Amino acid sequence: MNWYWPSCVAAVPLMAIFGSYIGSRCATKMGRKKTLLFNNILLILAGLMQALSKPLESYELFLLGRIVVGKCFDLFLH
Image (tube, rainbow, N blue to C red):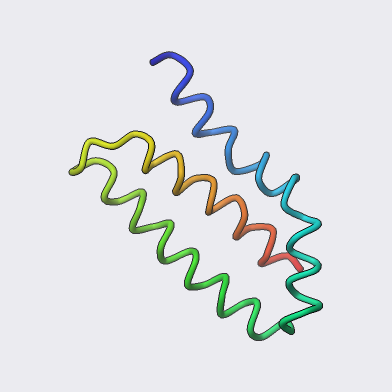
């Protein structure tokens, strides 16, 4: 269990770095407005995943939510 919390912290910047290529392609293909709307939907889903991870006692759900948040940071910047 010692690996879990550091991986949750590191998931956000790692996904932002590795996902930058996909974010720029998505903004070019769908347009900037649609990309931002899609990003907002993903952020809401990521927030729900992180909020529900405690009552469901699912640490993996929290990690998945952090990964989605990292990807959304990248989409927001493009």
